Length: 152
Image 1: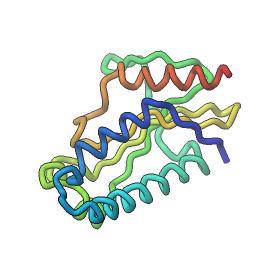
Image 2: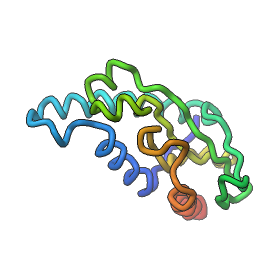
Image 3: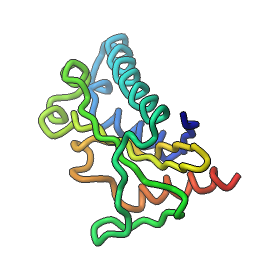
């Protein structure tokens, strides 16, 4: 089992994930919003635990291709978990536009350092937010934060 570390970039992307996908900010019923967020959080924590238990769970990403350019130290692997958020959560939590445009397609990008058994989630998003993936510079920011952790 690997150790899980978080970078600020992940938390920022999580906040955008909630803001852009869910209908919480339009709900008057704050209790309903809390229930929505609890269900969504539980699902995401479950997926993060799967990554922690088996860091190779997500598919390895090719870097420095014509469409994706980031720099990554050779001892790290960039991986992406691709999951569909259960329909029951999506129907209750997400606003209509998000539901119709790929909000079920959850993606968690993370770094894995096999020698140190470190897993560092760097970005979370849906295809509603980004058709393919976040901009390279956002991903690179998370990588740079994680590199600093690995050097400590």
